[in-house]
Image (cartoon, rainbow, N blue to C red; front, side, top):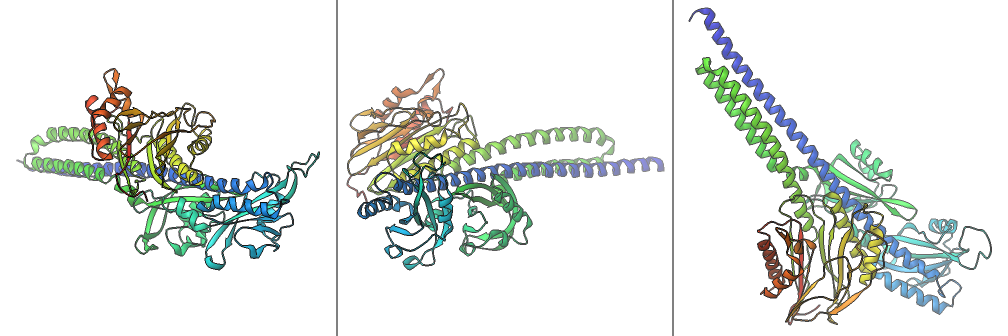
Length: 616
């Protein structure tokens, strides 16, 4: 080979080496960009989930304050006004206090029109004192309606000294004070009804348990960004804007929050140590969703946050799979280049074909992994949603629960359930189904479950609970959307179940015989305002109550559905030693009927009294 031919050969070899290196660099760059895109999408979906949780917590706080304000405001009605006899007034205060004590209220009182304490239930030593200088009294005196309330922070004294509380004030008007006047007030200002409650009771019930991920937590701020609750007690009572000094992105997020709108954001701040419960770890990046909460005439803010590493964990398997794919492609390219150096005459055509084939494979693989990631992430989210509120063990009660997602869809479903203990040896049971799927459906289920718990702690009557939940859902659910739900209260002492049913399939009672419970099916939730009625039936030892969503009876085999008759037949054939055995057997019956293909999500709940065990 002459010198010119050798030069040409060397040039070709170097060209192949350089081309291979450039191609590997391009593939690595594309992989990096693809991973960044996937990561940003995961962050966006994670932040949206945090926003849903923040809005749900805010809705619970709103219901909490509205319930207290309504009951305190009831002091303005009937004979229990400031002009009533002292004995009648103190009796009314006692009734309101006992009604609100389960919500953390520790005193109720009434001030006359001059701001002097007229009556108090728990602190008679302050009766006759003048509180006209307090901000809440001045705000109440300027109010034009008794359908509002005002909040003011207080510091407790006595046995609860040092603990921070909230004072809720409702203006009172004399209904006969305005006569024929055209004044916008309902009557002459008559005084103020107030209730005091511990702030830590509110936060423990509605904020502290909110966790979007293993390391995620929540904040609660007032309108000045003073910390009302945070995972670190050292932040309580401090201004978060001052604490975020040196972290401009966090301060910018707090300013957006203070404008009173819903939103999401990303910021850096000190890492939180769950063992020491302090922000003393190295700086880490966090995602946050925030929502405002109406608190009297002002605003509070709920922020739900988590480290970005928690979101990255959701796509870690997809990262590894794509890295392996890229590594294999790079290895093939390097092997091709080495082979070309040995046999350069054939490398041109071989490399071109290999590059074309592998590039096409990379594009197909990326599309496949994008779809795989989306399904895996959505399924994981649906499973997490179904386990978000585990049912606590209840002495003397056997509970079995199963959630089965649809086989053909990986979107977040709207099926939900809850079982919790009320006072007086009563058990509350909730099962329902929100129409549609996705983040909105998940947010609606969390709002319903939080609202039901908050309302049931005030008044466990199923009619009261479902009617108020429906009033809250009607303006929120889009046109064409709806919710089916059934809410029961089982009085274990009396052996009776009280139930309100909003368009949900009838529950099944399994004992010596199997039959559907005599429950009236009424209007779906979220469609129109409606006052739900209460049905009741006997539920005794030796019987098992079985509830389910419509995905069970609508399971298909061709053109036919599983239906209520097959459900009844499957229940009669079931032999079970526990409530969990029953729901497992019913799912197996539905799966066998549909050849293992479930077209809709299914929730099943079975509950029965245990023989001979305490009901405590």
